Image 1 (cartoon, helix red, strand yellow):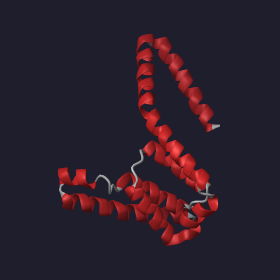
Image 2 (cartoon, one colour; image 1 turned 30 degrees about the horizontal axis):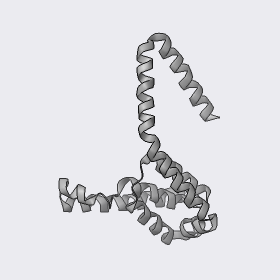
Image 3 (cartoon, one colour; image 1 turned 180 degrees about the horizontal axis):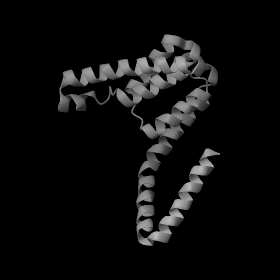
Image 4 (tube, helix red, strand yellow; image 1 turned 90 degrees about the vertical axis):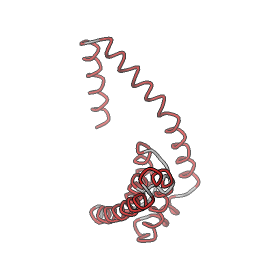
Length: 159
C-alpha cells in the first residue's frame, strides 16, 4: 500500500512538473533515465547472484549459520562476510531483507549491513595510501566495534 502511495505521489508531481516547465521536466526525466541505466547492470548482477545463492542454499542452512539462534558464531560469520564484500548500499538492504525472510536473525543481518557499509578490508590499501596505515586500520577497527555494538542492541530490540 505504501508503494502505491509513493508511486502515485511521484506521478502527480511529475504531471505538475510538466505543467509548470515542460523542458525542465524532460531534462529531469532524461537525467533519471541515465542514472537508472548506470545502476541497472550492477543491480541486476547482484540480484542474480543473490537469487542463485538463495536458490542453492536452503533456509535451514541460512538459519543455522546466521539465524537468531546462531548467536556469536552467526554474528562473526555475518561480520566477516560484510567486511570482505563490496556491494553497493542500494543492493545491501534488499539483500538483508531477503536473508531475514530466509531465516537470518536481525542482529546478524544488521552486523552484515553495518560492516558492509563501514568496514572495507578490500579498500584498506587505497585508504592507507591517502590517510596512512595507522588511520586506515584504526578507522576500520572502530567501525567494526561500532557495527557489532549497534547490531547487538538492534538484535535485542527486535526480539
